[in-house]
Amino acid sequence: MKGKKVLVQKVKHLLRKVGAPRFLHHFGPKLYELWQHVFALFVKEACRLSYRRTVAICRNLGYIVASKSTLQRYAWKLGLPFWQNLLSKTVGRINAYASIDGTGFERTSASWHYIKRIDGKTPRIGYKLSMLSTTKHKIICLRLRAKPAHDVKDIKYLLGKAKQCPSTLLMDKGYDAEWIHKFCKEKGIRTIIPVRKGIAKGSHRKKLQQKFPKKLYNKRSNIESTFHALKTKYGASLRSKKIQTARTQIHIRAILHNTALKTLQVLGHSHVVQKLYK
Image (cartoon, rainbow, N blue to C red; front, side):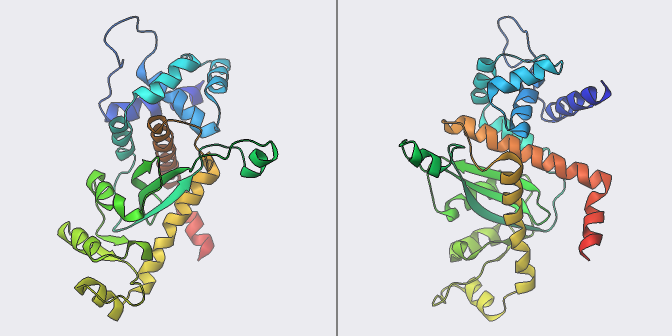
């Protein structure tokens, strides 16, 4: 029972930090509070369950949660600003270095080989995720697109939504553009991006060509580890067919990821891991 109370208090504490109301609506019978819906959605993503199995397991464990259809409706009803605000409260203080990169998520959990064997329809192109993450694997903010797009299109969005911006930003060669250096400099951010061969335009790119901080740039690979952690723990596919519920899924995964990192820091596990690799 003590563990049950701790889990409930964590969800309530996070909702209090963002100033969320007790009930999302003002009319009709108020059978369930907001934290009960959010908690059930967290359990769904953490355990990689369907809505129906999530309700069944939570009720078997003694939690009072709404029906499957109600959870589906709340996954769509709780908009993007709500989840962005919730994610920002799990970031805390960030270090000086951060990275921006993109990856893809499939729209279904079935493999392409299985779909081909049953003569099924080829699944549509998956979701595109762009993410701003610190070199210590903490996710600052993210953006999910329903269709593929070039990585540079999300630079302004991510830096605009970030409550805290790092002093140094590391990006791969796909972000090599002079306007990105100028845009980040206006915000007081130093950018380190490898310059593509045969391109010598722009004062910022010329400086990087002459003296490139390779040792510092090697920290950029930590964002790849963050992508790997997200896909390993919570899956490399998003079952949602609508982009709004898919954004709910990916933000919940990011919140769970940041919360797990915070727990490891409190327990001191990160220092133990660092000593093992020294």
